[in-house]
Structure formats: structure tokens, C-alpha cells
Image 1 (cartoon, one colour):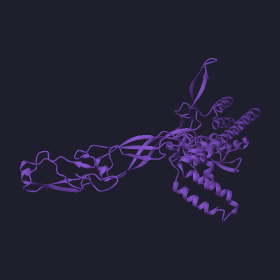
Image 2 (image 1 turned 90 degrees about the horizontal axis):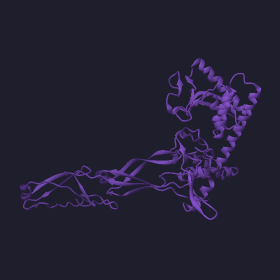
Image 3 (image 1 turned 90 degrees about the vertical axis):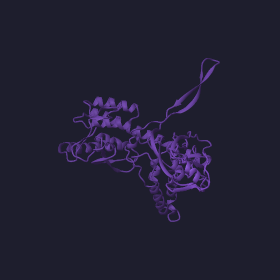
Image 4 (image 1 turned 30 degrees about the horizontal axis):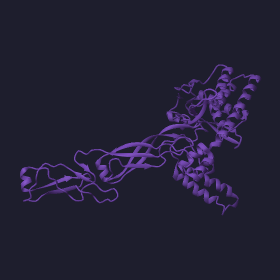
Amino acid sequence: LLVAQVSGVCQSPNDFGRQSVGISAQMKSDQRGKVTVEVLCGEDAAAAAARAATQKKTASTSGEAVLNCARSLQEQLDKEAETGAIGYLPPQMLGQNTPQERYRLLKTGGQYSRRAAEHGRKEEYPEAIADLLRALLRANVDETARDKLMRTMVDFLRKAEKRRSKMAEDGDLSELFDALEMEDDGKENTDIDRAALKRTYREMSIKYHPDKNPESAELFGRIRDAYEILSDPVKMLLYDTGGMDLVKKYEKDGDGEIDRVDNFEVNHEISLEEAYKGGEKDITVNRRVVCRSCRLRPDLPRCRKCQPCPGERHQRQVWMDQWHYRIEEFEVPSDERCTWDRQKLKLQIERGTMFGDRAHFPSMGSQLPKHIPGDALVTIKVRKDPRFKRLGDDLMAEMRVSLSEALLGFKRELVHLDGHIVTFGMDRGDVLKPGAALEIEGEGMPHKEDPVLGSW
């Protein structure tokens, strides 16, 4: 997919769409003035400029500004192709090894226009704009063709902005990160850095507190709201997929009016030794999660493997004739995208854990858009031990003794589950009958509610 001439540039598949190749240019954005646009691994000049022009922070609806940026990047890439100083060449194929695989470069402007129109019909605006830029970057484009291509590109730029604004009505997490002056790098879909979030909030709440800066009261409110949402995984999911109205409904009624995903149940096996000693154990569960911000920023590296989330199920009446109808179920496709995440959980094993005990992890089950996440329930299965048999809180071990030991007494040692030595036996003069049992107080399993040991 990537062609590199010098070691160290775009060598890993993980660099694709993340790592800068060291080529950049300035572009005039609509809201932030001049911004820097970098070429990332796997991109050409057109793709880099189109990506920047359709992202919130660097968005531009000026066709000339986007074209000038792409032209500057192309000049640098052309020079790089001659010198090989950096060691990067854009890929010849786009979407390699996917159903969308296609040649990056085409022969005519008409071919670029037709492919851009196809992307536009699918609302794939960055790809459509990139194809139009490739057509415009060709040599000797006549004025009539240039004007037509530019009009089409500006139309796509405006549609991209309109679509982003409409989709942001269901919540835009980037606004919350902006309020806290933090960056969501888009690399991983795991939880955000809570320690960094808390530290940033403390610093900014002190800096902009209304007692010190009365004119910053509104900004302080945005900072507080952003922290309250980003610090709560449930609120963050609801805001990202349903906006502030859904968060307020959750704060007011909990899960009274908001649908909840079914709990996620798994089994985990432990040894009798672990049940005796207790402790903490890392386990991994596979759960469906809603990809954070994927609806608004599908170009993020973490969105590469995402698939559409399951749609919502609704019912409708379908009339069969003038007097009869039937109820039909149908699915409304989701705008959100989901992925499967291997979530690490810390399983606390209490001393004396029983077969069938259950650990509860709130909100760590699978997710759906605009739903409260389900809980992860881990049912503990205790394996049979080759030496000890468990009877409730008691332990039983079989021991063979000789006839002389049964008649004349004996003394034995046994290594317990945690390694300590248990000494037991019969005094001389006491006769041990076949099948008899010796009870040793305090050497059985610990009681879960009380760490005092049972019998052995």
C-alpha cells in the first residue's frame, strides 16, 4: 500500500492515516484563519487537502483556498519524488484490499468528475473533493473545465459542512474537548485519559472561575459541563449519539425513559486455590462499542474497521385491503458506527468465592446509540482440585494410612492450597476405623462475609 525509499517513513501499517510524512502547507479555513495541513501516510496532496477542508477545526468552503493548499503540497511531493529525501510516495491504489479499491490517478478530467459524482451520491464528500482536486491539479486544464470543476467542488464543500452541522445536532464531542483545550487524537476507541482530564479541569476551573474572572462565567459553565460529560462514560456515549437533550433526560430520570442494552454475561473459570487465597485477576471480554465521534469524523484512524451499528427496530401498520392490516417490523438504519472492543476488566476474587458467584461491572456491557450501556456480568466457575474436594465452606482430602498406623497412631503433614503446612494425626491408643474422618478446625475455606476459615 505504501512505497517508502528510506527506512523510517510509513513502515508500519499503523502509520496509515496517522503519521505525518513531513510535508505540509498552509490553508485558509473558515473559522481559524490559516491552518497547517500535513500529508499523512497513505495520502496524496488532494486527499490531504480534502481531509482538512471537511474537518471541523480546519474546514473551508473556499474552493480556491483548498486548491492552493493542494497545489503547494503537490509541488513538494513532486520534488520528493525526484530527490527521495524523505522516502515517501503516495500509493497507486486507494482503498487497497477493500471492496472500494480503485486507482488513485485516472486519465481524464471526465473520469475524475464521474467518480466524484458517485462519491457525492454516497455523501462521501472528502473522497469526492479529492478526486476533483486531482482533476484540477492536472496540467493544461482549460478555463471552462476549471470553472465547472471548481463549482462542483465548492458545492461538495458546502454540502459537507451542512451535513456535519446537521449530524452535530446529535452531539459533537469535539466541542467538549475544545472547551477543555484537549485533543481527541482519534487513535484508540478506549476510554479517555481520566487523570489528564481531571488535571486539566482543575487548572481551567481555577483560571476561569467567576470569582476571579466575572466575564468568564459562560466559559466556566462550558468547562464544567464538558468535564461532567467526559468524566462519565454513560453521559459521554449519550451525548455523542443523542446530544445534550438526551444527557439531561438521563440526569433527570436515569434509565426510566431511555432504553437500556441487555446485560452481557460471560463465564470465567478459576482454580480452587484462587478461590481460597482470593486476589485480583485481569480478564478480557469482547463487547460491541459505539465508535467515539465516528459519525462526524469517519477519517479518524480508529474508524477504519468500524461497521454500521445495528438499527432501531420499529413497528408499522401495513394495510392489506380496505378492512385488514398487519403489523410489520422494520429497521431504521443507524448513522452511528460500531466496532468490537476487547475490554480489560479487573476481577476481584474474594476469599471463599463459591461456584456460581457473580461479579458485576456496571455499564461495561455492549453499547448501542442513544441507549444506556448494559452491565457486564461475570459468573465464576471453580475448577475441581486434584487434592481437595469442597463441601460448602469445608474441604475434604482423602488420605491412606496403614493398618499399623490406624491401630498405633500416626502423624502426617499436608501442603494446603496456599502452601502452608497442616499437621494432623492420631495419638497412640486411638483406633482409626476405615472411612472415618478427622476434623481440623480452621483449615477449611474462608467465609466470604467473614474471613474466618471453615473446617478441614
